[in-house]
Length: 366
Ligand code: NAP
Ligand code: ZN
Image (cartoon, rainbow, N blue to C red; front, side, top):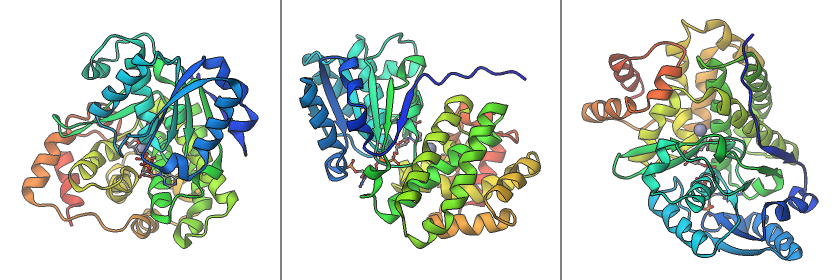
């Protein structure tokens, strides 16, 4: 047994979590920046809960709601400038993975004199405290140190994160996801599942990360009928948020693998949401890794109540649909870009090289 388990986020998960734990905001400082997407923080009710507790505690705040899906380096730089000008003490990220990831970048830039592209060197040793409030059940970003930003120059997504980018607090309340439509609920749930599943199969998996991953995979299996029917009870919403949180804890330790590494091309060039991108690759991902981690994959299928990997492939297709058609030129280009995702490549159970990545793209070309 060899473990190095570090989860420095205080994760609080319950109904009306923000109101019930209002004391944690004053612990982070006297002035805050709320970082959100365009309108979901308002629509789901999280913004009004946060504004209420900040006002009650006498905490000043500014509201930055320009974070786009797949946050850009330009947007986080703009927000960080504002955070510095207003001398904010801490950052509150409300939203899906995009605003929470942006909040992490802003927290680092707000506490250091550095340019946005220096983030990826991961050499900073401080950041403003972050409170993360998820409104999707997908990325688990509220409990990970990772921040994924879109690099227009590199035509892909790049991530950074270290000890200092773990949020101080994660406030999880599934009621904030009730406003999420069916498609977004499915796509984000598939993302959460892939974190558990890829983490479980990853070379960097450990006994402890596997325990968390398997509970996430089991819970996701219990949600499959609801994801197929589109009927999301409060219990299902809560379970999906739990899967997402577990997935975040898993990948904080294991990292992700090649499905994530390849999925970024679908997002960048086809505007496919992150979770759906991973889902589109799942069938071939399983086929590829099966010879090397057969027992582990079979155990996951059984845990989800699925007969075998072909039943899994069918469920994934029902959930996320068909992948886009690709040309030979697309495949060459995506292979080249996938090769930049070195961490995902080295962490995949079955060894990868350029030729194998090319074959994987061929397999999903349609
Ligand atoms: P997202 O990009 O944050 O949001 C997608 C869309 O959902 C937005 O249009 C958003 O609207 C809307 N939305 C969010 N919450 C809603 C709600 N409760 N009701 C209605 N609409 C809502 O989606 P995401 O899948 O959660 O995050 C994806 C990002 O996270 C990607 O950039 C991905 O690379 C990254 N990621 C990060 C990690 C990590 O560990 N940090 C892991 C995996 C993925 P608004 O624009 O109005 O907010
Ligand atoms: Zn993901």
